[in-house]
Length: 114
Image (cartoon, rainbow, N blue to C red; front, top):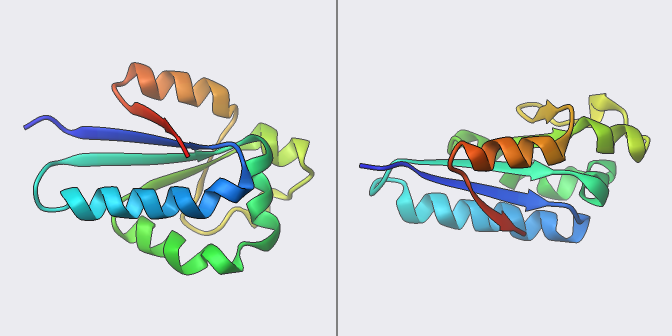
């Protein structure tokens, strides 16, 4: 059975929570039916969610426990003067979000802009 690969792109902070909810709905719908992989990439202005992350902490942890991978762009962290230490536990970083978007699509991930 082919694995469904979802890539959610979050370039705007106002779309962060909807993206997390979309990912959870996707995983819930497929959890025991089909293999899947979900990656969420936060870059550009979306990275500013790290300035007030508390409202998202529980949903973020839920997604990690469901196997969702959540990435934060290092260029955006530097560009918006956000310390790398603000990346929550379990979150990952990539040097350049735009490059990761292309590479992951080349690996078969389907792009959805949140």
